[in-house]
Image (cartoon, one colour):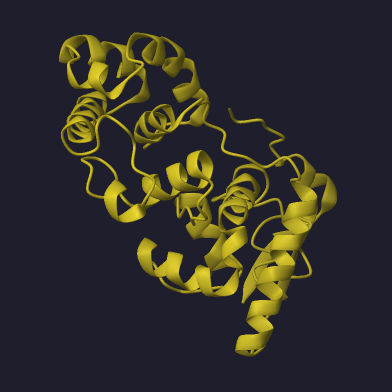
Length: 247
């Protein structure tokens, strides 16, 4: 049940029992609406090849894409190959990525990842999930970002925005990212996994915020069981919308 107080009034929407077929249909309708709302949805990290995206995604942990994109031009110019990263001076690497936060841990991940690429894959980023997740600092989320956006292999990216939205949409109550990934994978056609991930993330950044979602400005109002979590007044809600871009 969702509740919102707007101008002294409470709005509640009780969840109705939903069949499995109904859930699948609603999930796919939500994805269609988001596709119309964000026709230009894409990965907001700047990159030109799989290695650059892999490094950028590692840096994006606990950091905005905008900040990462400010750091990576100099980083990519200095270290164009996995061999360059593997042989990098740690202090110099750390200084270049310092502003992304947790720079020592991220430097460890980048150095370890690059060394593993050189030792096991000839310095090339592999295009399979089972290989990517063996690299230091690379989990399923990072691997799916790289697969979906650099290799065109469908993947579901379960970040904090994605988790928040699938819970609000009532798609799943799972909290483990891997379990969420598997559940959503049964609701959305595989060919759409990558783009559906982008759309949910864009929606989470722009409208369905963590603390106060802009419910009154949301195109999913009639499809979302959590409608009313944030202000439903259109004027109040419009003030909460963040137009982006976030890159």
